[in-house]
Amino acid sequence: MKQKTKQPSPFSVLWKWAGPHHGSFIYSVLLAVFGVASSMIPYFCIAAIIKQLLSGNPDSGSCVRLCLYALAGYCGKVLFANLSTAVSHTATFHTLRDLRKALMAKLSRVPLGTVLDTPSGQYKTTIVDRVEGMESTLAHLIPEMTSNALIPAAILIYLFILDWRMALASLFSLIVGFICAMLSGKTYAARWEGAVKAGHTMADAIVEYIGGIQVVKAFSQSAGSYRKYADAVNYNANYYVDWMRDSQKYMCMWTAVIPSVLISVLPVGFALWAFESLSLPDFLTIIVLSLGLTGPIIAAMSFVDDLAVVGSNVAEISAILDAPELIRPDTPVNLKDHEIRLKDVSFSYNQESGPVLDHINLEIHPGTVTALVGPSGSGKSTIAKLIAGFWDVTNGAITLGGQDLRAIPQDQQNSQIAYVSQDTYLFDRTIRENIRMGRRDATDEEVEAAARAAGCHSFITALDHGYDTMSGGSGGHLSGGEKQRVSIARAILKDAPIIILDEATASIDPENEASIQRALSALAQGKTLIVIAHRLSTIADADQIVVIQRGKIAGRGTQQQLLASCPLYASMWQSHLDARDKL
Picture 1: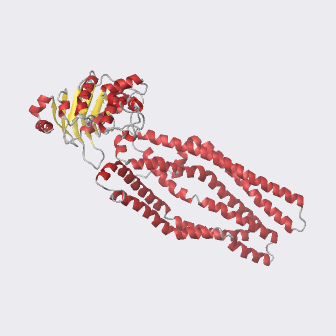
Picture 2 (picture 1 turned 180 degrees about the horizontal axis):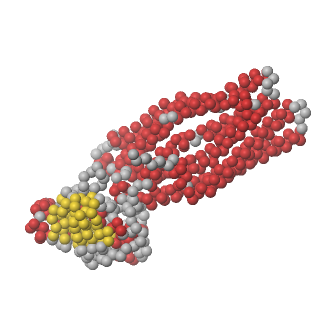
Picture 3 (picture 1 turned 45 degrees about the vertical axis):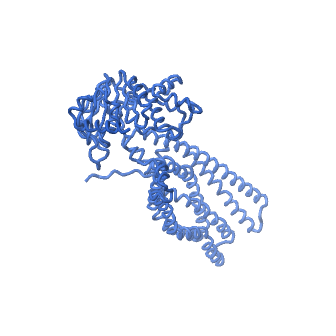
């Protein structure tokens, strides 16, 4: 029987993430320990002063020195505690910075399908909220919980030295309080896991609602009437209300019981003193010291929440960091040309779903135009994205220049391909910066030349700030056709030998389509162009048209060849002509 691999503890994983800053965290703990030692000085000074006052012959000079020692101890506590906090916070924020960088770098290495199948609200929650949730654990729990645990431990040791019976008496309320706290926290981990799921559901619903706000408004809906959003928000609120209601009684008990240390110390101490089994100076000293037990313990208990949730937070972050990657080498390979071949390629998005592509064999020669056509959902875009390296094939192989894509470094493959999809995305930067993302070292003149070639120079210059106009979030300040033309300009500027246009002209009006088609035709000279389009008139002159149906190739050839030999293409062409005649 195969033995299960032991999973590392959440704290060991968290400590590993903080690897470059271990020295700073250890330093913060040492400073916290010095702070604890300093904070103990006033207690012992008070105990010594009480003994002198009750001795009947106090030494005023000694009492003054003890007061100064107590003041020095307090100052030392403040100094070391603040230094510890400063060091731990600096190390923590650097750790969180490194962790967020690692998460974003990881997303660039995983298959695109992994990203697309995960709601964007979940990524936001993980990268922003869950990572931020590590701040309290790293910055406070490590040094402060250490110090808050050492203070009562040191006091208890001294109490046992003075009188073991009184030391046990001082523990009574603490033991009862801890039992109450344990009853309160026994379901905390499971409850927190449910809270995380509820939060994810709500975040996804919010992102979906905002993304579809145009549809919601168009059909006179509101946030309250949009059922999925309203249910998620209500469930999240009710979950926390029910959770707090169930645990409130235990929380009230332990917060009331733990500080009540004198309930047991006073009667036991009085009885021992009455029977002359405990001296009055020791009795008063124990009263003072026992009062110092509860504050640090309550402060330490405040970190229980962090201890309970750290497992969920670490698991959620690890799910991204440990996700399977596209395995690619680092050393560039020699590409003899830019010929693309699909050899018996099959592909499924996951094990549960059926095959999207089924034994596809296809050759795309350098310098040619290949059009992929077929009904919606037939697998056209999947082929384009596999060629672009967004996924690895399930079976078979795709080669570029004689090299398997899996043997080509990701950066090298990306430099060979310019990909423009129908789902155009622009960053909230200037239009000039969005186009320049095609080639970061391009001059302003080259950016504007690419814009002219894409047919978007005229509308850009008509804007208030021209090329320096902000695109808005996701390009929201531009129309769909304008965004697509900017994305085409970006691809033109990249000047890659292979260009993939996945419905790139879908949102462009007929008036501009002709000019863009001319620009793309000029751009395609000497390059490999792969086009996916529903408007069959735009690909009628392609060197090769490949008809895809239900994940298989139903036909291939030129326009005339397919009209004569492929009934599906002939039917699609006739439907295209009928639709155009009705315009």
